[in-house]
Image (cartoon, rainbow, N blue to C red):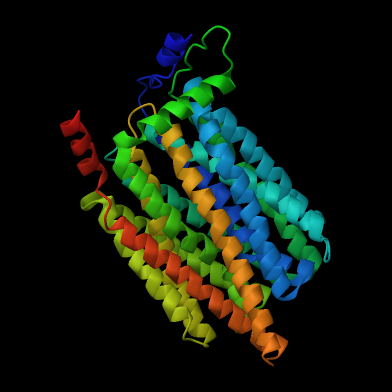
Length: 449
């Protein structure tokens, strides 16, 4: 049986089917749809609604951080096993479909979350977030099937750019609803609109995109779960052969904390420090989404013409500048400018990071490598938002005990938490500087073989 399992773990064979323009657009449109979820639920509307209406005060910041952290922890455990299984069974699209529907359904269910509904407010969001994040494992793993390693930075950048545009379109629809009507009912209705937008946008992916990995024969008497665990164990054993990839994941784990903290708490920061109303928060996020399109395009070009590591270092430095700048301003206008700069930077970080994973991965191991990528990302995403929420809440309590009023204490707690974002970004950048580029790493492996 061991011999059969050893043969079964070989790289998934790819059907040599030409990639059509329609297939690439189908892949782009998935980003178009799930970015609407990110823009409305994570960034502009639900996070602020949850913090201010469902919970309230600094405790709302803490519970939001815990909610995000729980979802990320679940995905961190699921990603490597499901990614390995998807590679073996040639079933990335099936898993993508399941988790997408999970996210869409519970995004719509957020409509039923009323002020004070802490349990359902957390539960529905956590399930929607699990679906959103888990689906990205399989969406990302389809990138090597529609692009060569040389094309990945450019194609990944296009995906982020088009995705950001999807977030803009959905935010404009929601902004019109809230501006013209207003009230909690319309705010909750925006989650139904987002779910429908999400569903319609991802349909081309399931209808047009062909999965090229061929299913492998299951050894007699062995379950898919057993195969997944064996392949996962073998991948762990082979880690020493991919040292630069592991170093990259360590760097990603650290700096991704800062990225996710900035994203997950952007609306809360704006509302707490600058008193932004819901319409202003949506406009702010539209600015971030617009500059994200620019960032994805620009850093895709930088990565394509030079290399991904240079593009990643530049984008991280810009993000650090934006975060530190945020600490010393009290002008709403300047905060809009900072949001624009952060939009350029954070999309560069995410897009280039995703592309570099595909460049490190050997053929047939894409879902496994992206699974580990998601483990790093989700594990760090569990730590980052939880740390941010606790720092903000505990610092606010300390300042209140020192005699500051509630509003001032909450604002100072938020600023203390912002410092933690900068710490994660700087630490991740330092580790990244010691990582070899994918092409250099492969040359090293070949010379050692």
